Length: 479
Image 1: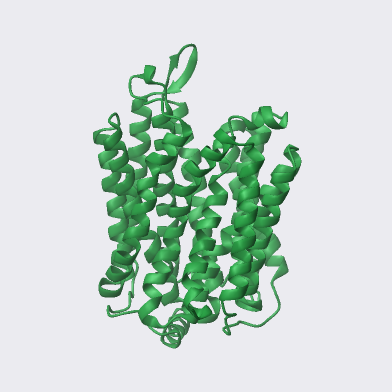
Image 2: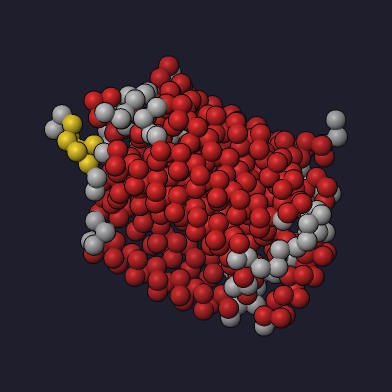
């Protein structure tokens, strides 16, 4: 078999692996304080560190891919993820584990880099379905990772899980280097180091405040200071980017409605999607004594989410066909509407297991449609030499949406509790409010999608040259 035929499956494997890496630590969180002789607050940084580093490195590595070679940077990201897994496998020290998880955050750039490679390497007739599959790997990997990690943790030493991800990571990096061609599309120039540092500082302040606000207090000096710092730093960064000849993020492109509204829709969709996994996992694991909980184990919980992952794999070709005939804007709007319908099912019945699985699967179906349309919108709106960095920003917006979703869901559930055995537990009303909030955000994403202007005519994905000319013409018109 020619190596070129392996490009799509190899890149999809990398995307699934990235999502698995982000998920596998979840079953460990309740036991890690005991296993590492540390506090629950310290253990929570194993999730926070990955979130922060992923948010910072995704646009940075996307820009580096556009400048220095997408395959090279993609291989480096997978290698950093693998090194982080090896460090976790070798250590039980919480400081080392947090640092290792920060390294693994580099893998968040795998999907935008891979989508950019697919644009450069595949013919137009194969590009849409490949991009849709690549976008779906996020949900597929998450659905596979949770039950897999739970099984490993239940029947083997917890370090075994990280040895497994280390081996898979090494396989993924080697496969990318062997099977994927280096893209000839580059945007030469000097890397914007001040822009990268400014974006990193602003995002760390913003996401640290969002992720830790529930623990530190939303009105605390630390959280308010972080939000004020984020506003100041990101405002200065925006000013610097507009005055840099080769900026890290081309804000002139971002400010155009076709790109900017796609980013807004990504943020809202990320919020709506993430609430499904968060709330479903807590709901089905709640004790039966609550009157609504099912008392499921973490393995059984993962199996409840597995149909959603399978659905994302099955529906990714359909989303590509809808985008080809109706345009990605319609696919995105349809996906957001389906997500809202899924939450309506959750509100109607969240006591019966089959209805819970049905509602979660409907949300996953809508997510497949929306997530597959977002990169296609970006590909059609930006020049070919900026696809990795532009998709990196789009993934960043999803990440911010997911972080905000986590904080918002936690805030809703904390304010709607009842005592069970002397301990506060969320009420069913709290869960239903979380579903309603996520459904409303999904409808907002649908509205944002419908306002995106200038969707290209149906009939397939335009060529790179056509998109480049369109993007440059629009940039000149907006200047």
